[in-house]
Amino acid sequence: MLDSSAPIGIFDSGIGGMTVASAVTKLLPQENTIYFGDTAHLPYGDKSTAAIQAYSIKICNMLLQQNCKLILIACNSASAAAYELVREYVGSKAKVLNVIDPVVDYVKEHYEGKTIGLIGTKQTVLSNVYKKKVDALDRNIHLKSLATPLLAPMIEEGFFDNNISESVIANYLSDASLDGIEALILGCTHYPLIKTQIRKFYGEAIETLDTSEIVARSLKAWLEQHYLINEKGEGKRQFYVSDYTLSFEQSTNIFFGRQIQLEHYPLWE
Ligand code: DGL
Image (cartoon, rainbow, N blue to C red; front, top):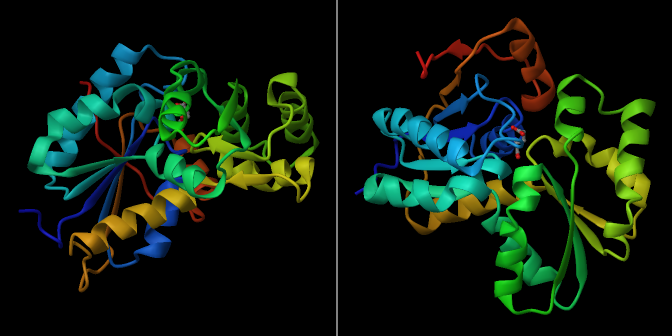
C-alpha cells in the first residue's frame, strides 16, 4: 500500500530533467519531490543501454530508500534504455513512470493517420522505442525520427535563444528525414528550452509536443486515479547530484526556472 504523503522521486542524467520536475511541481505544488541528477555520468544519450540500466537501478535504490511512492524517469534516454528493467526491479514498492508513454498516448489521441517527427539523443532515437510504441498503437501513424546530439550540450552551455542555436536548430530540422511531418515530439528533457525557436522555425503549421507538460499531466492523473495526491503536503523539494559543480548549480536556473541549491550525493564512491 503506497503512502500519499511519501515523496515523488524524479531522476535524469543531469539537470535537463528539471524541466519535467518544474512542470510537475507547478501542477502539484503540495507534493514533496526528490530530484536526482546523475551528473557524474552525463550525457546518457551517448551511453550503452547496459550502462544506463546499471545507473538507473542504483538511482532507484536511493529513491526507494527515501520511500518514494512514485519514481519518474525524467529522461528520454533512460526511459528508452531502462524503463522495463526498472519497473520490474521496483515491483510493488513504488509506481514507475517514464517520459515516453504519456507522449505516445497523446499522439494516439491527436494524430491518427498522420506523419509526425521525433528528435532526441542517439540512445532515444536509435533504440527505436518511440517507433515500436507508435507502431503498436495500430493507428496508421508514421513516425520519422532524427538524432540531434548537439542540442543538449548546446542548451547546457546556455545557447538556446540566440543566432547560434537558431542555426543549429535550422540545420537539424531541415534534414530530409523530417520532411512532411505535422507535429514534432521534443524527445529530450532539455528541449523545452528551445521550444520557442523550434516553433519559430516551423511557424503555426506544425505542433511541437512539449513532453514535460504532457508527462506532468499524466503523472497527476495517475495520482488522482489512485488516491495518492498529497492533499496536505508542504511541497518540500530536495535536489541531489552525483557530481557537484558550481556550473551545474548555476544552470538550474535555466532548467527549473530559478536557481536552486544542489546537494552532492556521491552514489558511486
Ligand atoms: N535528459 C536526456 C534525455 O532526455 C538528455 C541528456 C543526456 O544525453 O544525458 O534524453
